[in-house]
Amino acid sequence: MMATSRGARAIVTCLRLKLIAIALRFFIKVTSRKALKRDQLLADEIPIASQPVRIPAGGDPECPTHYIDVVLYYPTSLSLSSSLPATRRPILINWHGSGWVFPLLGSDALFLKRVARDCGMFVLDADYRKGPENPFPCALQDVEDVLHWAAVGSSKITSCSLDKSGWK
Image (tube, rainbow, N blue to C red):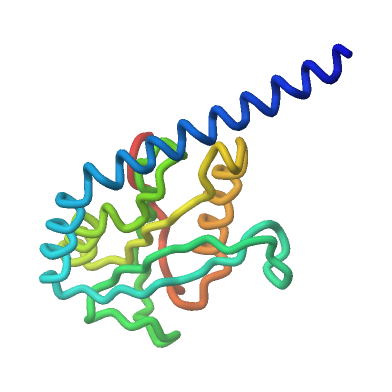
């Protein structure tokens, strides 16, 4: 009897968290639509190349459990080929500030394109799995997978040195 009560409470808690997340996601989408559209129009005017990338994640790159969506921004003067200059180019990795819940990949595009243009560097705008559907530590594992891909596994951005953006 006690186990059933605990199980029922766990299900109710899970459903409550999901309903709260859905309501908050809807609210953010409705209230931020105008600002995001304005920023996207401004970002489109900046002459920076962008390329969506899907990073294999979840352990073995040959058999990933899921993929992480990333947008790579870079000045048009830089090439993604293996014939990059011998000097190391910095790469900045940005994770959007969504409180681990909101799907806001691309909301920092204006800032990131400016960084890529003004600093002449590669910039990754990385996503991660959101809660409550993917509980802790799923998002942190995605962060580790992006860092590993940028440091070791990327054939697109060789000869780069890593840095990070956001809170330290």
